[in-house]
Image (cartoon, rainbow, N blue to C red; front, side):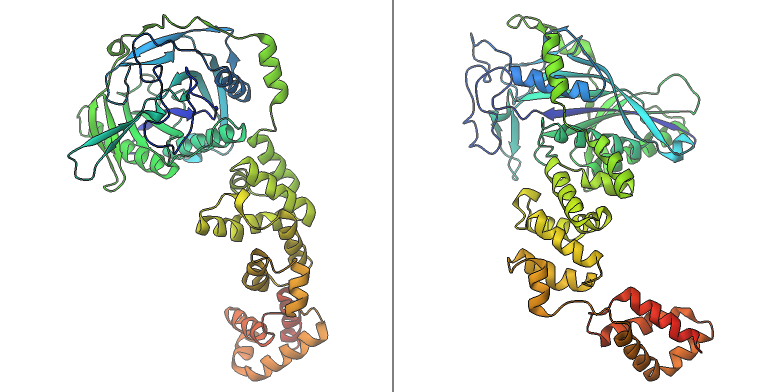
Length: 486
């Protein structure tokens, strides 16, 4: 909330479906192909070409609807939405309306306590999710003299998920978008790449005085291709609209784009009304009729949903919500973590390594978890050694983990070969503690006098003397005992 105004936000999320072929033709749904190589008379909009509905896209829509607790409409229809852009060769888009295949669902997110007045989850309504086709993609040369159009994406199946205006802050909008992202990736219906545009978002936002029933003037913000940009753009737009109203000025109904370099939204065009699109029923496609048996088949095939998995991990492994959400980022990442947790016997230990060193390596090398050259069984072996205090975490991170990645053997073999096992002998540690205390009489006297901030210095000296192989917790215990003797 800014300057006494309340934000009202609804997101429209476009999800490219992972089907083998396009929405209304047999062209391959293939990212990265040579420009204009995956096209045919149907997706090019040539005269006389007739569309045929992709049944797999319908099944994916049903799957999402069930996961959102929505109603799957037994009958829906396709319409033509008229607009004229270079990347839309037909001059219209085939989309669903006014009835969609999926209607009246919901997604639960953590409520923002700054605007909700307390902790707990908030239910965000999903008004509908409708099937449609994507447009092509325009490429603009850096010299701004010429542009090119790649129509490989024209006709790719989309689900447009229309959220109700139930979000009240940029943080809630970001959390809602992340929840949808986990869901569509977890269901296997989208690869979730925001960078490549297979998961993208437009935000509708207005502001009003708290308690006011009438909505303010709505602005649509486009070009939001990351969770961070969604949050930044909405925070900026809340501030911009609030200041306009606070100054007695008018918020224009328009479409704005997010400029990530300048950190601001910029006007693009006035917002279209439904009449501008001249909707009318698609004459070449019959109504979409969904068999109840097909719905039941998809219901039985639903996997464990990401939010269900997250709550199970929070309970079983005592993980924090944000930790569990990060671990559920994809089915493959979640499965890897779960294997490490089960084999190591430590969910928290497995989570620390997955969100720490494993994620670092994946980011540095630009890899997905499937391409990591380390089996979960091997990582579990390393986690077991650390949790059993056979191996110090620093040594595990700096020496054993890189050796595991290099294929030098199991964690146990590497530790044995390099003599890295942690020293847990209390008498040996006590001897080192005595040596360091004798060499540092000043700090010892100050600690005994109440200056506990120097304790870390002594611990560091002891661990250094032990060449990083000492059990740090045992060092703390022994040092406490010896300092207490005065």
